[in-house]
Image 1: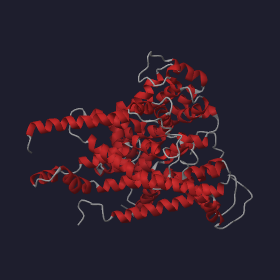
Image 2 (image 1 turned 180 degrees about the vertical axis):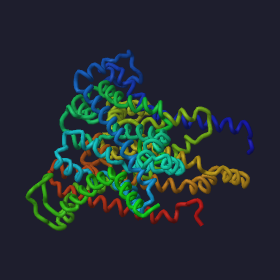
Image 3 (image 1 turned 180 degrees about the horizontal axis):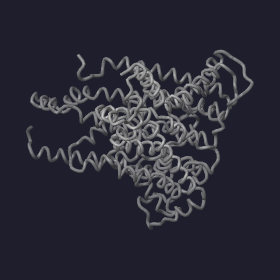
Image 4 (image 1 turned 90 degrees about the horizontal axis):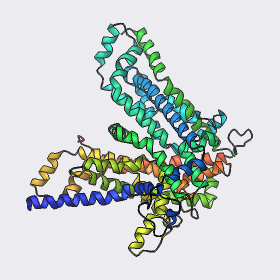
Length: 280
Length: 297
């Protein structure tokens, strides 16, 4: 409390200093990626390296798509899979969550803890058993292992939807029944139209998680044409490990969709993380 | 409501949650059950027709493999050193991002960005930064007079590099801490100010106890994650050099897909599951003494 104005002024300066110093560590590698991506191949072999490109060039993108003509295909694959996953997550999880929030049966309170318990199962212990299952179903080298589970209710999203549904007053349900509505009309005409925020959160979250998934497509898809962008990039690292600008360009492309989503829908992503504690 | 209607309602309930039931049985119960079954056999490939029951042999013999022990020790390194470092890193970042200064929202946006980078892209970026010849890190360090270090190719540096990478993508934990910090009641700090408490004292006597449930939550999530460390090690250095980043799950992956010993891989998975369950349980029990829940007592 002593020192007054002057004290708090230098305090603010210190705060900005700390924030900026940390920002270099966190944004630095991304800036280095952007810088590398716009250099010529020769410039990246310079010692000491130049911080920024001497002449801006986008030829790395040309090389990237020439070395790996499947790049476009992989981008399309990733979009297709992520969109189907997001749709499935919203539809199936909201239906299941409606069951868990609006039916007063004794089974509800017995089964819901199991939903939450599955959140605690370490996914990697399911890696080999799931592979064996998908192999027996002849699902290897298809997108089914990535998409089908999303259409059968994800525990995170069921939890999110249920929490939200519980905040919608039951009186609205009753009024619909009086008007001759049934359980399904309540879900489709009352609950869902009131749940837009959580629907948006789930769509974004499921899309992002699917886009970020590496292990799933890496394990279940062997055919190059079926790859997602992530697995494709991993192949690219092996193919052209010394072409730094092309690799940086590939990394940049894989970031763009999520980056754009983040800048336009930051609020929803942040909410989702805080609510579920999961990675976005 | 009439009794018959209630019965009908129960039926409807099961109809609504049917997707989850099908998913739970198909993608959890069946694979998990088969996994337990096969872990007591010597089955080699998925769908093997010929196999024999070998009892606990898989569990006993997994310890014979020196690489198994190495992978277990490596994973313990990531749990014992990685979890505290990453959690502390998240907390420090959250405290920084909780500063009440102009433009803080912009800083928050940038700090969270690395968390949304696909892991393969993260690894590409880190290989560019940490490249021993052409990377920006060694170039910067050489200005300070330090010799070139082969970070990713070094047996002693690869694990710290991976932990650092975890801090870089720790945005989710930071957000959880940030939300917890915002929920600490202001009147506690005001009271402490009146008592003339120092900043350090305020942090240890108010902030830390008030956010301790979040700390426990983050530690548990991070512990579970680090026990399962795989993708980072696989992509960054293929588990090397000299098995320095060869983790437990990496070994499970190799047992199955390189050695084609699926039953062994399943035994190892179950071993890991038991280990994680045990450690999580101990953490929860221990935490009772340290974690403060508002409204308790």
